[in-house]
Amino acid sequence: MPVAYERRATARIDKVFRVLLSTDEVGDQWFIARNISATGMFVEMANPLPLRTKVIVRFSPPGGDEAICAMARVQNHYYLQYSDGEGLRALSGVGLRFLRFVAEAGAVPPDDRLH
Image (cartoon, rainbow, N blue to C red; front, side, top):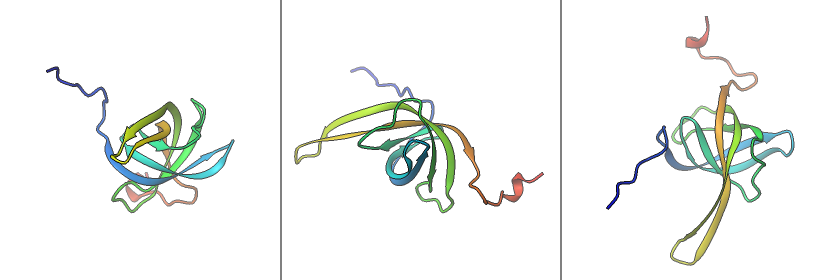
């Protein structure tokens, strides 16, 4: 039996949590993220944003108290079909690649970041 190799460079945390996406085209909208890694996340959405769309994503990581704000780009579109024992289900969304993390407007930088 062949061994499956992981293609991803970073580990993923499979956890469901809310994210707020902001774009110039559609404004601020809440979505559900299904997993996250150091380089990006999967966000469930019925009508995926176009590829290469830049967004600002705000979220609190699973188990975290502080909000995180990042600039990201829509890297991939995903359309998934699966069976949950009750029938066939479908899910669509986007893969976001983090471009950089930014401080929220008005946020106080941590002491260790001050020079």
